[in-house]
Structure formats: structure tokens, C-alpha cells
Image 1 (cartoon, helix red, strand yellow):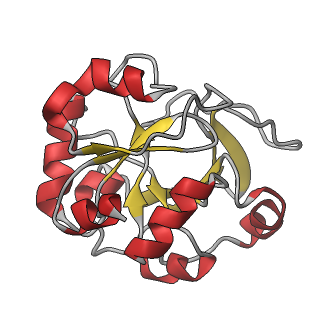
Image 2 (image 1 turned 180 degrees about the horizontal axis):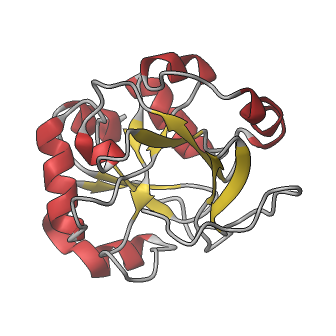
Length: 197
């Protein structure tokens, strides 16, 4: 797949997910991450979320898997739920925003899953829009926002949700909603007053 080759060479690819279009780069490529932040005009203190295609990749990204997440992973992955994990110390500050945490999910979209399998590692999945603007829902939205600043767009038509993923974290050992999104998760505490996402 051309998109996988572009990512492996440090490029930026827009891809469809079950929520909105995302911008993917190789999460291990510092130059690609820097370029991603530049074209999105995203503040450096705001982390970007990751997609993985298999739960086995978690061990290379997180220092622990909270027990409270087990049932959520079983129920909602693959799907539009991002979980915030304690990050391994070697992860790029672009991925953590200096928070020492990292947001991760497994997408249920077949094209996102296929790209992940071909790359064999984590990729970014920050929404395909300029920082603060509405996430792109189709290839033309992405092209309107970025033009030639991205290297390839995987055309998956219009995404079904239009909402970003729901983000859940742990705070004082309780599940907390950091961002409302495409799904509602029962039994989660009130949203925290501050979220870096």
C-alpha cells in the first residue's frame, strides 16, 4: 500500500476512521511528528493520540495497563474510545505533551486497521483539521485544510460519526471523562475541568 510506504519514509497520511479523518505519521519518527504539529498549527503542549492495530503493541508504549481499563478494552476496542495510559519514558514529548501519559485506541475502521497492520507499529491519529477547527469528515475537507502539506489521502468516503473519539482517563483511581465523543460509557465520573486534548 502506497500509504504505508509514505509513512515509513516520514510522510503524513490522512486516513478515515470510524469517527473522523485523522492525520497519521510514524509515532517513532521525531521529524515527522514535528512536521505534523507544524502543519496542524497545534501547540506543542497538546499531545496527539495514537492508533494501534493490536493490543500487543501496548507494552511498547505504556508503563502499566490499569486494571480499571480491562473491561473497557474488552467492550469498546476496536472502536471510538481512547484511553489515557502512563507512558513509557522514552516516548516523544510530541505524543505526551509533557504529561507523562499517552492516549491510545484501536480503530474499527478497516482501512485504518489495514494501514496499522502494514506499518506494524503505532501511528498518530490526531484529527485532520487545523488546530481548533472542525475535524475533517471526507477527503475534500482534508484537502481544503491542508492542500499539498500532506503527502497522501486514503479515500474512505465520508466518515459515519463526525465526532472524535471519547477519551477516558484515571484520576485518583476513578474513571473520568476527558472528552465527550462518539460513544457514551456508563459509570464514568464527571468530566475533569482541564484536559490537554
